[in-house]
Length: 168
Ligand SMILES: [Zn+2]
Image (cartoon, rainbow, N blue to C red; front, side, top):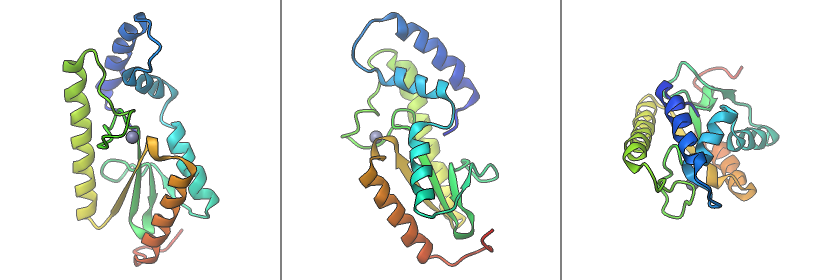
């Protein structure tokens, strides 16, 4: 998960304002900001990595030369995996509680978050045009049973693909 350069300062400013309010409810903007502070190795991403590795799947991290810099790639099979934070990437699932828009400063958040989602979609289409299969893993779908399904999905894709490069 990467963030555009403008995001960090805006998020920090926003969180400073949010922090002034006292509330027991988890504000999605605030939890996204906290995830940002923790850096790119977010918990969902680490869970995915650990599960795939334990299943014997060998991937490469952060394919910087590829459009959208996928979090994990199986290069020889042209499979790209993105692990998306539900808030920041606006998980398009009505049941996802993490993707809810913040109640305050909607004029600030709405265009930014919609822009992120649109960018993800453009990246996916561009990669697919170049022959990549793209898997999006959502933060709220990293429970053990979800991750088992992910392993199966990747294994199936690998079987159905012809290796375009030598595995290294
Ligand atoms: Zn979600």
